[in-house]
Image (cartoon, rainbow, N blue to C red; front, side):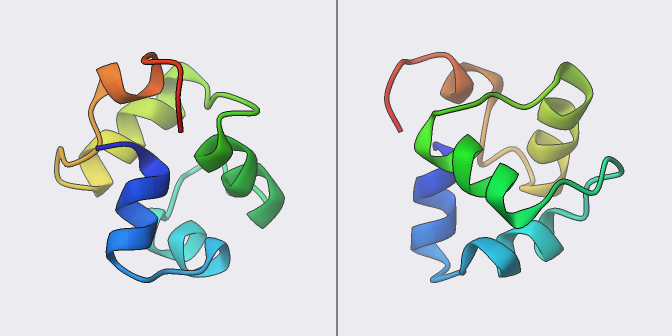
Length: 68
């Protein structure tokens, strides 16, 4: 499941998603937005944290399929 779909399914704002992901890099809400929309991509470490913190609902392949 893509990060944006994960957010929408839970009815999270980008700010709430940021807080729920609890990433060690502490990205801004705008960065989370850009990841969700596919404008930017998280770093390798952040991707692994996203996968873990979403309990594998967002997977590595979801960052590479070309759509948000």
